[in-house]
Image (cartoon, rainbow, N blue to C red; front, side):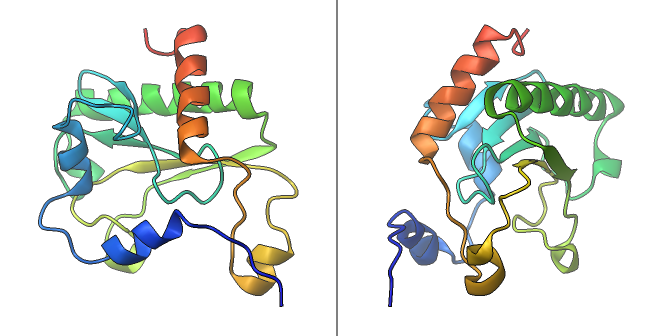
Length: 165
C-alpha cells in the first residue's frame, strides 16, 4: 500500500469542532494578514485563502458584516464583493492559467456551508486534469503547493497587477 503524506490536514482534523466565534470575524480582527491568509482588505469585504482548499489558489470573498445571506448585506457591500470576485478571477487567471473556475456560495447547512452564518463566495480555479483518480477513487486531493507558497504567489500577483486599487 502506498501512502501520501499531508501533514497539514491534522490541524483540520483536530480543529474540526464547533468554534465559539466565526473564523472570518476572528481573521479580520487580527493584524497579521499573512498568518491569517488575508490577501486583500477592501472597504466592505476582504479576500482570503481557503485554509483547506479544494485546489491550489482556492480563494474566498467575504464581507466584514456577519450575515447569513447576501440578501441581508447592503447594496454597496454586494457591489464591492462582485468587484473583488472579478479581480480574484483576473489574478488567478494570470497567475495560475486555469481552464475554468467554480464560483459560488453555499448558503445554509443543507447547501454545504462549512461556515454557517457568515456568507462568503468561493473562487476555485479548475484545470482539465485536476479531477484525477485520487479524487475519484480515493476521495483524496493532491495539492501541488503549500498554502504559504500560494499566499505569497497570489499576494505578489495581486499587487503587481493592480488588483488592490
